[in-house]
Image (cartoon, one colour):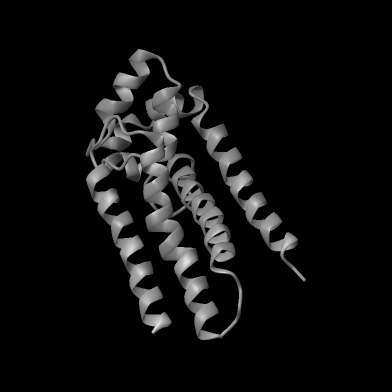
Length: 174
């Protein structure tokens, strides 16, 4: 029935996001909208949209699917950018910094830095995507991410997405 159909649709969307994630790995010049779409299909759907939608179905609530998609998407995008930001700036997260760079995984922050850097910094950033010994380049990477405005952009994007999610919730409380 409806539950099985919705489950299959949700799984398919997440799978498409995972395929994009694998396809984008190592892409040194991706478009930011490609990364955003991957983040929506993979992170937002897997972590927020799908669990909320399944909970809604199983509890027989009548919360609109469109509302849950919009809310889950905002939360998921904010969550993913926050995760990417932690990967760049935090040495207290329990994982090595610049793990996404080391794995060759371009992020929205990477795209922003690439689009807003000098030609020299763009070339350096692209050359370091997928670099196994990424820790040897942390100082230079931090300079590029800071100088390009990528860190400030990420902080603002996280805030905007979480604020939008909060506004959705407060405007839909009866």
